[in-house]
Image 1 (tube, rainbow, N blue to C red):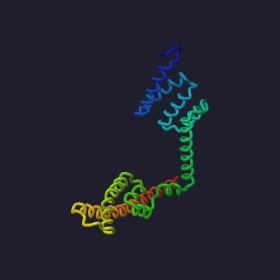
Image 2: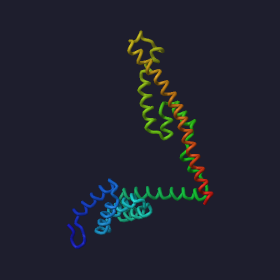
Image 3: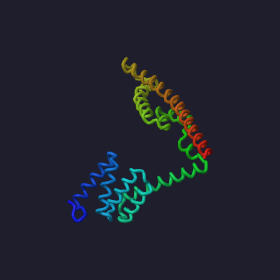
Image 4: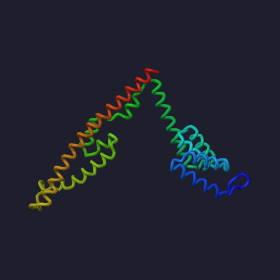
Amino acid sequence: MEKSGRLDDLDIQNLYETAWRSLHHRRLDEAQDVAQKILQSAPDSTSAHELWGDVLLALGDKEAAAAEFKHARELEPANVDAERKYGMVVLQLQEAAGQRQALESGDLSRFRGAATKEPSVAAGRSAVFPGMGQLYNGEYEKGTVLAVLGLLLMIPAVNKFFEWVMPSGPPSLGVSILGWLGLVGYALTWAYSIYDAYQSGQRIAAQQEEIGARMSSQEVDK
């Protein structure tokens, strides 16, 4: 209940819950209005400034968000969340400033180096185990599928290998067929993973070179 222009503890708690729900569902206008009400009612609350920083960060205003997290940290030095959020946003701002400086100077090596994948490295990783090259290329779903498939096929393949190395009598027909399926299936999965990782790496490298050339062209036009 509101009293003399201020809110009691229960009202503020309800507003906090409303603000967090609004942020979670990306209803930013509502979150902004609610956070402002809390901040006006409790201007010296570290939680209110931290919440307002979260709203500003969701709105894309990182500099203002950093200022709010810093203020929340100053109000309560033991506020670990505000400290963490402040450090995170400051790092993002520094990274953005570095990228902007690199663009202005025409030095695009940091962008290429960070994004370009070496096809030979991707193929080499898949040669170690299926799917590793795809994970290196950033194709996480495909890499996970290939890795799981490789693991499942490796089990009967290994059993088949030990049948040859340390025979203990003729295996049953079902076990023998399963072993051959595992051996052939793993070999095919392994070979495909190497080929696909190399091809994907080449495609990604070409895309990054194209982006770099376009960025260089835009800098020259400026």
